[in-house]
Length: 163
Image (cartoon, rainbow, N blue to C red; front, side):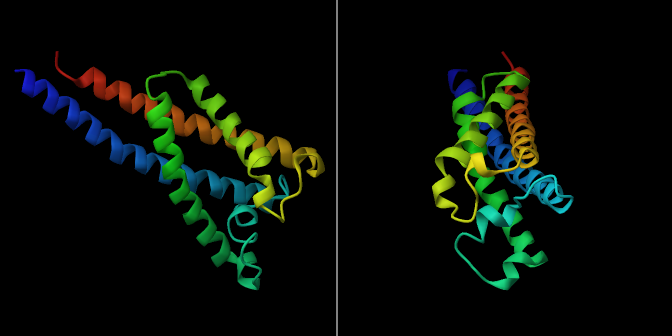
């Protein structure tokens, strides 16, 4: 019976990993598309390509639809890593607020810590108020989506486990 419990526990962990990776990818693609929409309607002066392609590739196509699609897919792939980090650190916290805090922390990391990597992104003090608020809200929504989905899946798998 002890071996059955270990096997079920490993099965729960294994089933949580693919759902976390899918959550990360879908979250990255969806919320970067929302970010692209924010930039299209001039709520933000930054788009996904501003962070992903333009710092390293100075070609015309990076500003076209293909550059946007490639950037969104790359953000989706990078978001898998973010989701795995959340899984490891905060999966047991079953609260929407942890996702909000996680999103705010990610925003701080991107706009303060990683800002020197993005040569074409202005410093936070040089951004417009619309851009600052839009990106901050976008990161909070992204963090809430990632965090609450992963926590819900974790607690649901624990709840379904037979005693």
